[in-house]
Amino acid sequence: MALVTTTEMFKKALNSDYAVGAFNVNNMEIIQGIVDAAIEENAPLILQVSAGARKYARSIYLTKLVEAAVEDTGLDIALHLDHGEDFDICKKCVDDGFTSVMIDGSKHPFEENIKMTKEVVDYAHDHGVVVEAELGRLAGVEDNINVDERSATFTDPQEAKEFVERTGVDSLAVAIGTSHGAYKFKGTPYLDFERLDEIHKLIPEIPLVLHGASTVIPEFVDKCNKYGGNIPGAQGVPEDMIREAVKHGVCKVNIDTDIRLAMTAEIRKFLVENPEVFDPRKYLGPARDAVKGMVSHKIRDVLGASNKR
Ligand code: G3H
Ligand code: 13P
Ligand code: ZN
Image (cartoon, rainbow, N blue to C red; front, side, top):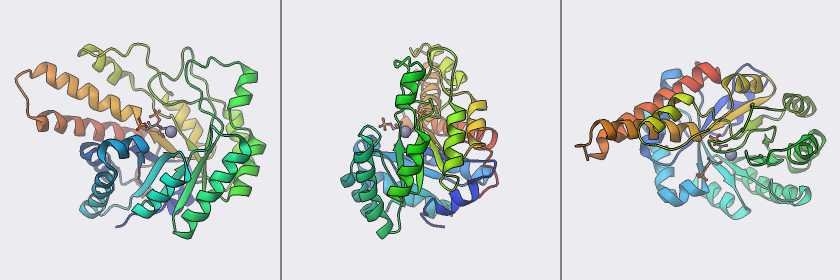
């Protein structure tokens, strides 16, 4: 049992029929729900922390909670920084004991992205930590893009090859049509699998990462709306599309929004049905169970990662 890097996890997942789930964590209940699911499914696990999560929870609390999860459960867990925006935050996380960091230079020009990524790779590798980078931009729903615009924002396969060669990065997040949050598509969901396939064929040894991979599970959206929420028209990546992506080199699938929805739906329902309750444990407990159920479902039925630990 230990905090581990993703190296072994990805080695096994690459060119196999499953992917490792990377779940965003912000508090104790989320961590416990996810960890309980990983135990139940006997699955490899990445817990990831964003800059926003570090700010909200205060960074040391999340690190210590994840360390507690390792000690309490005996699981091997990779602790990953999600979307590090510069060298400083990546360095801080390496120094704090993270086993994996993401340097997200995707909003910068190609050469600058290479430069920042290389700097982080050099520091992280010197400290036994692995690095994920991103190339291409994740388009939001408001970007109703046509084919030409798509080429401008989605990951260019030749650039991806050059990028990994020049940076020495361990894994690469690609833009093929997913986006963050609960509003990913206005009309029919579309992912560019041809492009994904081309990237995978050019850099077959590099684990690919799919950000913005929540399905925005309708059951949770409906439950939120039924119990006083207002999130109309939310739509994510259909589960079949995630399964398809896993067949084309995607080894890490990032999930945050589905956790938020599962928790919020449960808390909304509980509070409406139990207006007299004011003990947070009474609604955070069921919310933790809801996270566990949702994550088990992802691992088992979507990522195919049950019993791959
Ligand atoms: O990639 C975005 C993740 O969902 C993290 O979101 O920055 O609100 O913590 P956050
Ligand atoms: P979702 O918003 O689809 O859950 O994506 C999360 C993510 O990519 C975290 O980096
Ligand atoms: Zn992301």
